[in-house]
Length: 404
Image (cartoon, rainbow, N blue to C red; front, top):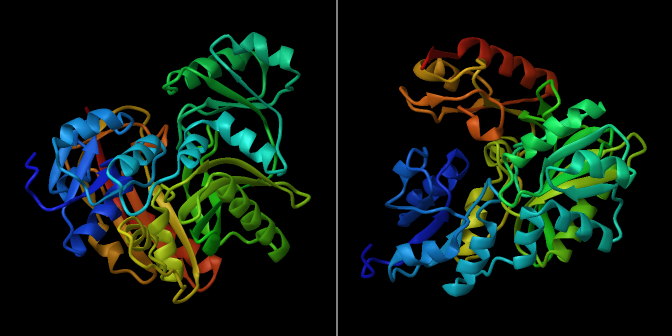
């Protein structure tokens, strides 16, 4: 890599989650360097240069840059790179230093639970353990059902709802397979509505906030198939959720930029914040907020890391849905053809539609968020209208997946 080249933007990650960042940078004429441990990532083609290094390894990233000093560092849609974002923003003295506490709370669920406790917010019982947790859980006093998940993964990877004692050991083994540290969280199951709240802060205040209802697939793994926006909740509950999110951002030293929280809203209106990603939300969330509110959080994120002013005033408001496209097959295959995509893109109410997996690309079962194929975003004047437009779009779209 040539150190004489103009200062580029360093983007940590090149999956479909980071595609909007690269596209916005290109629209502005900014050079980008993509960092990812996999060469087959869909956003790689959008970058001006590529470094094949794990986004978790900030020292290897700096070494691979070989003297090139990025003007800014950014990521989104994944927690894996957040500590590297902190370290590299300090190393290169970028306009905004990503806070270490925010990275730690996003990448370690036990750290997040302690943050909730110290902030005086409503929490619930939990245990951090290893593969021997099938013996430790009963001794801890945790009663079934419980949720078992890796302590340091996101996107529902390795997560299982356990309702019977016999399912505990398999769930722990499943979580361990996705845990970088080998540590596993066993959490009290809290019943209620599954929501996501995203806040975008400026000087410690939320200048934009949105609460959506998760569209979960049936089963014990809490796999997100999309979001309905906005979630239909009362104003008092909405205010409590947003206030709790801002309070935790303050505890993480996050004063500017985005953070999203997974929330369970209990029947009595109590919000239980489950975990945080102190970055732009994944699963195409920025596409949804742009469609529903005319708010471009990706553009604001780039303005922030570049040290420029940003604003996020909604231009309009409607109802919207983002649907994550996944393979219906339980086996690996190859994407042979996509039909109907151009037709649905021109259909009324379809704000965005993209298949990010290329023709001939590998298709894996949709067992975690990393195996998505693309997105469809629809809007409507009412929730019913949005649902109808989504149904029509999905009926038109055909993904031809052949066995590999």
